Length: 156
Image (cartoon, rainbow, N blue to C red):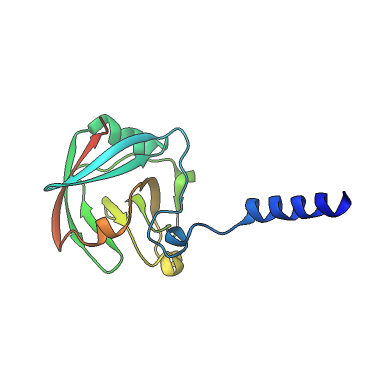
């Protein structure tokens, strides 16, 4: 009986600390978890990407502006574009770096960003305010083209 309990305990421990799925480990999906967020869609042409915004001050202000359209340019690790008007934010939400799949507001340039690569080297980038995350495969974001226009809306 002791041996059976040990085996069960070991199994449960492995289940609790098991690594992410192969797709998550390979960086194909966002690893950020947002509970009680607001579902949105990012529409680029015929492509619709599901996402979730968190409850930060910046995200709530973005939600109040929806539907919102912004032009973005692809860089090595993100799509980034200047918003018409800056979002408000709480100083406590400002940080360096990101997780792949994050949707951020970068206060240093009034940038709306969708970050899809290089989280391991992202600590050098400051002024980040995480507002949400992509809910689908990141490959859908990486393959959008060089210059895009994104329409952000509440999910239906």
